Length: 130
Image (cartoon, rainbow, N blue to C red; front, side):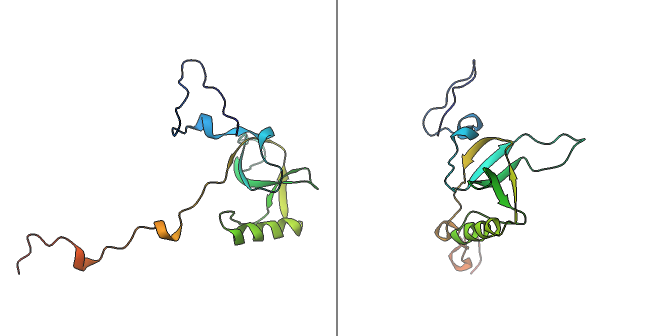
């Protein structure tokens, strides 16, 4: 990933400090091997056609464009990516060249990191009359 230098007057973040300026890269540096990414394009004007500026997309060699399914989809699980890829293979997708920046798809919480439920028998009972 290419990290752009900080604008004049701003400090460059140290390792471990991510900012919006450092997590986004130029779309020219994005993987074009079918990897799903989060892509940004300029928001639409209020007088023209409407579209989402932030979308999960992947490069399609045949279309020579960034593509995504034409209905709800998710790319956070293997099965979700498979279903999204199947929609694209079935020619059920949108495409665009107007993306300007990208960042990798973020990871999601795993089942082991979910907050455990509170067991009422283990709560602090100070102040209770017995």
